[in-house]
Amino acid sequence: MIADINETRGNATAEAISRQTGARVIAVECDVADAQSVRTMVQAAKAQLGSADVLVNNAGIAVFREPLEMTPEDWRRCLSVDLEGAWNCAKAVLPDMLARRDGAIINIISNHAFTVIKHTFPYPVAKHALLGLTRSLGLEYADRGIAVNAISPGYTDTQIAQDDFNRHPDPVAARAATEAKQPPGRLCRPDEVAAVAALLASNEARFMIGENIVIDGGVSIRMYE
Ligand SMILES: NC(=O)c1ccc[n+]([C@@H]2O[C@H](COP(=O)([O-])OP(=O)(O)OC[C@H]3O[C@@H](n4cnc5c(N)ncnc54)[C@H](O)[C@@H]3O)[C@@H](O)[C@H]2O)c1
Image (cartoon, rainbow, N blue to C red; front, side, top):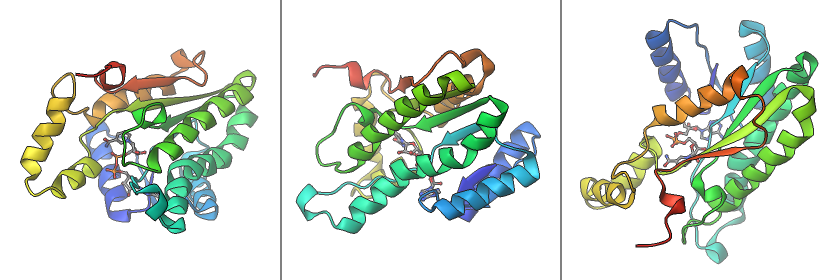
């Protein structure tokens, strides 16, 4: 099941996965920041596909503000989607996972979970906290068959990245400059993140608890140039 606040994008993603894999994929409109919307989505998933074996918390927004100029609404929106959204979804699927003593929860964080770029406040606040949520829930339920882990991608070639480049006067030059800053000379591909999510979803990874796998092309291990 694909749950997205943007119905058009959710449907397109579901159709693409279905086309590529032959699997039955359902898209549902859902705002992860709204606990009731999440409960409705999880009930729909259960009714149509059975209870969740794996939850991937991927929904996220980038809110970058000067701290003292930021409105309370910006702060609330960032924290409610990037942090509380993952908790809302985990809370909704955990009872069934715990009843079966089996489940994997995978939080898509960012290398902003442990490093910070100036002028990106409060996104790293939410992402640092999401790592805390991953570790807390990981330890809490490790002895009840649940594996909670995280993936921290670096700059990834998705819509959010393209939107960012499009804000520059020369989007092609902006993309090239960002690519040049990555040690491999390119952005991360979404399928490279998905491959690690597939590993964390598998039974083979169940001894991994509260882990954060970084896929950032080495950006966060570089001291400076
Ligand atoms: N692209 C990057 O460079 C990058 C790097 C590190 C981490 N991330 C993280 O990866 C995740 C996916 O980002 P992306 O790059 O694919 O961004 P994206 O904007 O392309 O996709 C994010 C998706 O989340 C959905 N969404 C937003 N708010 C929502 C809400 N309240 N409820 C439900 N769905 C909602 C959007 O409609 C969109 O389909 C995010 O958590 C992001 O912070 C992205």
